[in-house]
Length: 345
Image 1 (cartoon, rainbow, N blue to C red):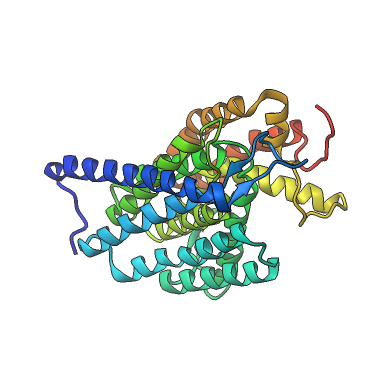
Image 2 (cartoon, rainbow, N blue to C red; image 1 turned 90 degrees about the horizontal axis):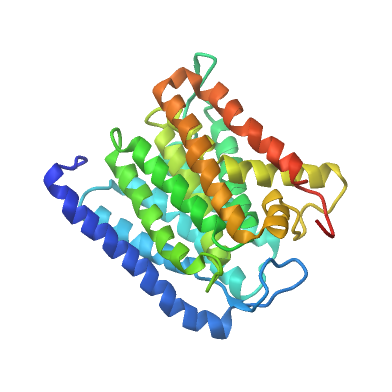
């Protein structure tokens, strides 16, 4: 197994990644014609868009990503078990694509999500050990329980956060790209997979940047949340620090979605019903989609990435780093009244 990359191989890999970007972009272009006829998202009272827009473009991310990952595997740069683990996300993409066409009852979606999570956890051997207060904690069997909750929540929260143009794709590009950089020196396999996910998502972002020409749909949002969560878990087996880093990079989405859900639940609202009460949705109504996207990029690059770099440099700083990273985001969630229904801002 060849896990290394020489300097001489850099340019061919860059060219190859450009090919993945073009594949994603062109695939989404082809899907757009199909979606205009079969998957048109008509605005309603909960929508953030004004004009009917095709959805399901996330399938382009999935196809470009898996074609590239298959090539990595065939070139002997990815071991078989990891390849199988990554392919479990196809279950999530599949049920999402079906749900984009016709509504699938929540219980069936949930069962598929749990099955995909269990399969992935079995292949990667559960939940990685974590370092807490200087002690290494191996969760054993309970790691599978934590792992299922973690993966199912991430894929669903990514779906919840896919509500305005460019937001979910931007988050996927940032988290996967930053994660690829952090693990490049210790695990070139995972770094390549994360890079491919970043480039495939970038191909979609070019179509989804405000004003969006096509939406991601459940096929893309569920897949991205699951795939990113799985990559973070796999990186955590190399070093528990990477798990903390992954959660820090993901902090904007985790904070907004979790805070919103908790407030809706504690407030007696029907938390499981569709709504438009996330902090980012309130902010978009007040300041516009583009300003929200630019602000999220600023938070990611100027706040979360430096905190993640600090944790990378000082591995014992994982838990305090999480607290530092999330604290101002919780403040923003409160400031923008996440979880509350507001008729006018």
